[in-house]
Length: 245
Image (cartoon, rainbow, N blue to C red; front, side):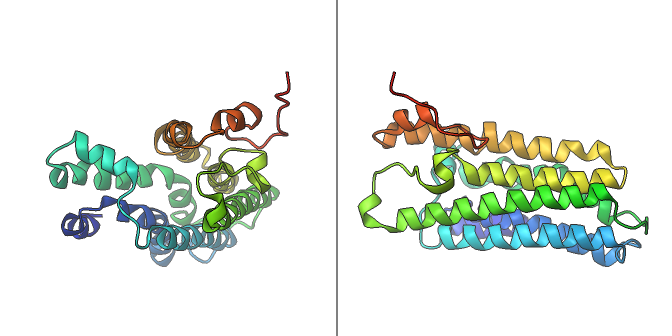
């Protein structure tokens, strides 16, 4: 993270940290797998695959989305509020995200740092299934939004197609579900205490850097967004509500 901070200073763009965020989890998983006595267990392999697939896909998506774009509006706001931002960005962005990654990755640390060679249990497969559902929601939601934004005719319009008809943030919902699935696998190994990981991730997505900030911004910039909010669930996918009353 310190290296990323140094790169961000001449660029005046700390949002380069966003594509790095999922890769931190991949690095944690592979480091633990390479150095742990339990690296050969079936559960360790399952965890390594789940974290790598999630992190590599999200990292590639965020890199492609960020390429050639200015600094994200969230960081522009921080830059205005915390001068000199080149200094404050180290603790307020980079160190903070590193600390959050430590907490969120607790289930990964518990499984890949464990030397238990016991075979996979039914709960492991439940966790893998939950993870897969989350990955589908996140991946499909991201791709649907990317295609929508790529069409010039959609400029200024509200995305309410596909998964976005049932949730205003299906990609964030999927991200949360991914980490609940990862936690279930950790719980199968007895690491129930790592529940702090998905709780923190879900809180970040709902209340900190995800839904809350975007809702505030979209409400000001998109005509018709209030009507979309009235009929569409904010997070958990639900059938659209009727608004013809």
